[in-house]
Image 1 (cartoon, rainbow, N blue to C red):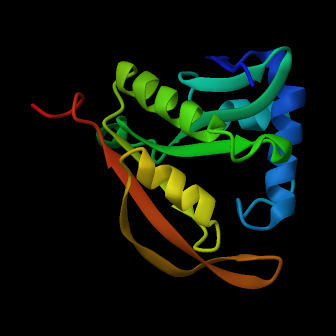
Image 2 (cartoon, helix red, strand yellow; image 1 turned 60 degrees about the vertical axis):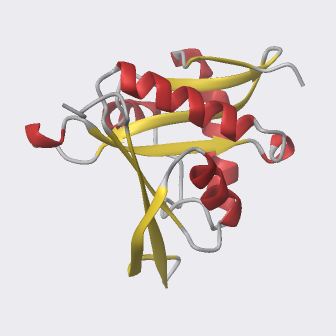
Length: 165
Protein backbone atom coordinates (compact mmCIF):
# COMPACT_ATOMS: atom_id res chain seq x y z
CA UNK A 1 0.00 0.00 0.00
CA UNK A 2 1.49 3.33 -1.09
CA UNK A 3 0.99 5.74 1.78
CA UNK A 4 1.33 9.49 2.16
CA UNK A 5 1.02 11.44 5.40
CA UNK A 6 -0.47 14.89 4.83
CA UNK A 7 -1.99 17.78 6.70
CA UNK A 8 -5.66 17.14 7.45
CA UNK A 9 -8.04 19.31 5.46
CA UNK A 10 -11.59 20.25 6.37
CA UNK A 11 -12.89 18.12 3.50
CA UNK A 12 -11.19 15.06 5.08
CA UNK A 13 -13.64 15.21 7.99
CA UNK A 14 -16.11 12.78 6.40
CA UNK A 15 -13.35 10.12 6.32
CA UNK A 16 -11.91 11.07 9.71
CA UNK A 17 -15.40 10.83 11.24
CA UNK A 18 -15.94 7.39 9.73
CA UNK A 19 -12.62 6.05 11.04
CA UNK A 20 -13.32 7.61 14.45
CA UNK A 21 -16.73 5.91 14.52
CA UNK A 22 -15.05 2.54 13.80
CA UNK A 23 -12.75 3.13 16.77
CA UNK A 24 -15.66 4.03 19.03
CA UNK A 25 -17.50 0.87 18.00
CA UNK A 26 -14.60 -1.35 19.13
CA UNK A 27 -15.26 -0.27 22.73
CA UNK A 28 -11.50 -0.12 23.37
CA UNK A 29 -10.40 3.12 21.75
CA UNK A 30 -12.08 5.97 23.64
CA UNK A 31 -14.61 6.90 26.30
CA UNK A 32 -16.58 8.70 23.58
CA UNK A 33 -19.78 6.98 22.51
CA UNK A 34 -20.49 9.13 19.46
CA UNK A 35 -18.49 11.20 17.01
CA UNK A 36 -18.82 14.92 17.70
CA UNK A 37 -19.77 17.41 15.03
CA UNK A 38 -16.90 19.00 13.10
CA UNK A 39 -17.24 22.34 14.91
CA UNK A 40 -16.70 20.75 18.32
CA UNK A 41 -13.88 18.48 17.13
CA UNK A 42 -12.17 21.44 15.42
CA UNK A 43 -12.46 23.60 18.55
CA UNK A 44 -10.89 21.07 20.95
CA UNK A 45 -7.96 19.94 18.77
CA UNK A 46 -4.82 21.93 18.10
CA UNK A 47 -4.60 23.37 14.58
CA UNK A 48 -1.08 22.00 14.13
CA UNK A 49 -0.47 19.15 13.73
CA UNK A 50 -3.51 17.40 12.30
CA UNK A 51 -2.58 14.59 9.96
CA UNK A 52 -4.19 12.03 7.69
CA UNK A 53 -2.69 8.92 6.12
CA UNK A 54 -3.74 8.56 2.50
CA UNK A 55 -3.63 5.55 0.25
CA UNK A 56 -4.45 7.00 -3.15
CA UNK A 57 -7.53 9.16 -2.59
CA UNK A 58 -8.65 7.20 0.46
CA UNK A 59 -7.98 8.36 4.04
CA UNK A 60 -6.95 5.27 6.03
CA UNK A 61 -5.92 6.91 9.30
CA UNK A 62 -5.64 10.18 11.18
CA UNK A 63 -3.81 11.72 14.13
CA UNK A 64 -4.29 14.97 16.03
CA UNK A 65 -3.50 16.62 19.37
CA UNK A 66 -5.57 18.17 22.13
CA UNK A 67 -4.12 20.55 24.71
CA UNK A 68 -4.12 18.99 28.18
CA UNK A 69 -4.85 22.32 29.85
CA UNK A 70 -5.52 25.95 28.98
CA UNK A 71 -2.98 27.09 31.61
CA UNK A 72 0.01 28.72 29.92
CA UNK A 73 2.55 26.53 31.76
CA UNK A 74 1.18 23.49 29.87
CA UNK A 75 1.28 25.03 26.39
CA UNK A 76 3.86 22.41 25.33
CA UNK A 77 1.91 19.39 26.57
CA UNK A 78 -0.66 17.67 24.37
CA UNK A 79 -2.71 14.48 24.25
CA UNK A 80 -2.51 12.20 21.22
CA UNK A 81 -5.47 10.87 19.25
CA UNK A 82 -4.60 8.33 16.57
CA UNK A 83 -6.96 6.09 14.63
CA UNK A 84 -6.49 3.70 11.70
CA UNK A 85 -9.33 2.28 9.60
CA UNK A 86 -10.11 -1.33 10.51
CA UNK A 87 -9.28 -2.68 7.05
CA UNK A 88 -5.87 -0.96 7.14
CA UNK A 89 -4.68 -2.00 10.61
CA UNK A 90 -1.47 -3.99 10.99
CA UNK A 91 0.19 -2.38 7.97
CA UNK A 92 2.39 0.14 9.79
CA UNK A 93 0.06 3.09 9.13
CA UNK A 94 -0.29 3.93 12.81
CA UNK A 95 3.48 3.98 13.27
CA UNK A 96 3.97 6.21 10.22
CA UNK A 97 1.29 8.60 11.48
CA UNK A 98 2.63 8.69 15.04
CA UNK A 99 6.22 9.29 13.94
CA UNK A 100 5.12 12.19 11.74
CA UNK A 101 2.89 13.53 14.53
CA UNK A 102 5.87 13.49 16.91
CA UNK A 103 8.06 15.33 14.42
CA UNK A 104 5.40 17.92 13.62
CA UNK A 105 4.53 18.40 17.30
CA UNK A 106 8.16 19.18 18.08
CA UNK A 107 8.23 21.68 15.22
CA UNK A 108 5.17 23.28 16.86
CA UNK A 109 6.95 23.57 20.24
CA UNK A 110 5.34 20.60 22.00
CA UNK A 111 7.72 19.01 24.53
CA UNK A 112 5.48 16.33 26.03
CA UNK A 113 2.95 14.07 24.36
CA UNK A 114 0.66 11.94 26.46
CA UNK A 115 -1.79 9.19 25.60
CA UNK A 116 -4.47 7.46 27.62
CA UNK A 117 -4.99 3.89 26.41
CA UNK A 118 -7.30 1.17 27.68
CA UNK A 119 -5.21 -1.78 28.96
CA UNK A 120 -7.12 -4.07 26.59
CA UNK A 121 -5.91 -2.09 23.55
CA UNK A 122 -2.61 -3.94 23.28
CA UNK A 123 -1.97 -2.81 19.69
CA UNK A 124 -2.16 0.85 20.70
CA UNK A 125 0.04 0.30 23.74
CA UNK A 126 2.68 -1.39 21.57
CA UNK A 127 2.43 1.34 18.92
CA UNK A 128 3.07 4.08 21.48
CA UNK A 129 5.94 2.14 23.12
CA UNK A 130 7.57 1.60 19.72
CA UNK A 131 7.59 5.37 19.21
CA UNK A 132 9.26 6.23 22.52
CA UNK A 133 6.30 6.53 24.89
CA UNK A 134 6.71 5.12 28.39
CA UNK A 135 4.12 4.00 30.89
CA UNK A 136 3.65 6.60 33.61
CA UNK A 137 0.98 4.65 35.46
CA UNK A 138 -2.42 3.07 35.45
CA UNK A 139 -5.45 5.13 36.35
CA UNK A 140 -7.90 2.74 37.98
CA UNK A 141 -11.62 3.18 37.35
CA UNK A 142 -10.77 6.38 35.48
CA UNK A 143 -14.17 6.64 33.83
CA UNK A 144 -17.27 4.74 32.87
CA UNK A 145 -17.96 3.53 29.35
CA UNK A 146 -21.47 2.21 28.81
CA UNK A 147 -21.92 1.91 32.57
CA UNK A 148 -18.68 -0.03 33.15
CA UNK A 149 -15.66 1.41 34.99
CA UNK A 150 -12.55 1.32 32.81
CA UNK A 151 -8.88 1.69 33.67
CA UNK A 152 -6.56 3.80 31.51
CA UNK A 153 -2.82 3.39 31.02
CA UNK A 154 -1.15 6.83 30.99
CA UNK A 155 1.77 7.01 28.55
CA UNK A 156 4.06 9.93 27.81
CA UNK A 157 6.86 10.85 25.47
CA UNK A 158 9.26 13.67 26.27
CA UNK A 159 10.96 15.41 23.36
CA UNK A 160 14.73 15.27 23.11
CA UNK A 161 14.62 18.50 21.06
CA UNK A 162 12.05 20.78 22.68
CA UNK A 163 12.12 21.88 26.31
CA UNK A 164 15.56 20.49 27.09
CA UNK A 165 17.30 23.76 27.94
